[in-house]
Image (cartoon, rainbow, N blue to C red; front, side, top):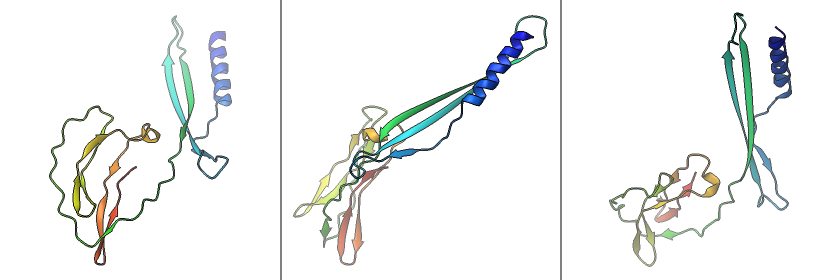
Length: 160
């Protein structure tokens, strides 16, 4: 009985001591957001029930909480590329043969047409997402040519 009371007391004290708040916190750097970081907090709770050996009908319930914090760099500010504007509509996209990915981390970046005194095809390729996105699923949003009046404007692809 004393063992059970000790375990229950420890369990109660542990539950009172462990309090967590689940929020993403941005820590602003010294100049602008150039040094901004994101703190990711994860909480894992494990609850187990055991019956100690012997003739008693007592059960021991154990709750274990693990809280980890990880600091990752925030997304750097997007560079504003000069806008590409063309008077001639781009050709239709080419059909590409997509070969096997070099690793499970690689994501296919589709080919596209670019303008350099005429239309030129940039072939698709496999690419590893930037390190800042490695902890979560990353998606490549392909670039596209959008018509604006009589002009065609290139909207570059980016990682999300």
